[in-house]
Image (cartoon, rainbow, N blue to C red):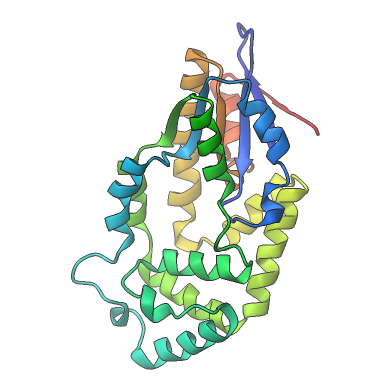
Length: 258
């Protein structure tokens, strides 16, 4: 999960750290190392800005676009069926969430399955610690770019995934546990494959295209000042992963072993 990047003229490397967007006690396993690195850097970048202004900008776009409703994509009978399943196994009544884009419904259900709804994600812990350290903070992606990603997602596909997930709750829980286990073991290839297998049509938008943007911004920021960078670990590995692109841009990329 931890890599350092350097250029030929560097006196100090930058740190690249792969996060996980779930929030359980297991997901903080690397926190002591994260905190140690955060204390060494004045410039900190997270995947997106987590300040209040950015949150307020993105929040309206978490809702379905005007004119769309859940029953445009799923019948009332099927909705009621999966609603009952999720009340039983997740303790969440999705009727209260049906005004949201389905990706946020899926996220809340997955967090509930992992008993993680009240725990702060590692991204937020990094942001808050950097604020306390009075670091210069920024998101690698702007709120506007995050919104454009949201608007481009396959809504119909996510509703189909919501239905599929309801048919095998135990398998969903197993996959989430596999994801957390791979994160704890620092197995970025396994994380990449697990992430890719659930994205479907959104794979290109969520991984390949964004990796190019993330890598270029990391490299440009590093050349200005060595920094601490964090973003989802699913972006690290693969033939079009951030690490491979950084190497192509001229970085020397080295794993930092525990």
